[in-house]
Figure (cartoon, rainbow, N blue to C red):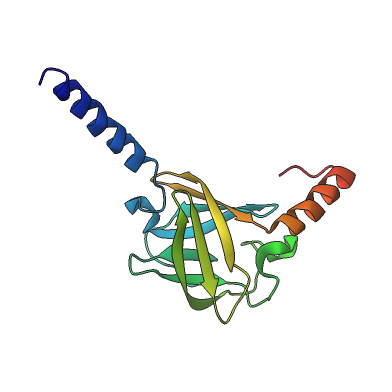
Length: 154
């Protein structure tokens, strides 16, 4: 009995720690996010009070639905001219999201592919969200060769 109590305490804290690492189940994800900055396929968002239709952003819902204010372009924010400061007004799109792993989400917009894909949640706090786009092994290999030749950091 004396050995059982420390074992149960250790198990309790281990499970609690593992749960805290699950970013996709974190209630902080279910907020209104405004696109603040875009680096090579790394999207940095900041919290906004209400979902503003005039600025690019994204909102995750608990039911697996996602709402996005996205560029009309099929290239999305992949082009440096499609940053939030651009004068064109983004349009509202509805999509879905699902948990792939503890720190990875898959987002799908059927009518706009600019934010469709798999993303790693590299940072999630009460005021900031960073999503890093994940590509297939073939595309990653091509991007690596481009990064080496053009000295682009990821």
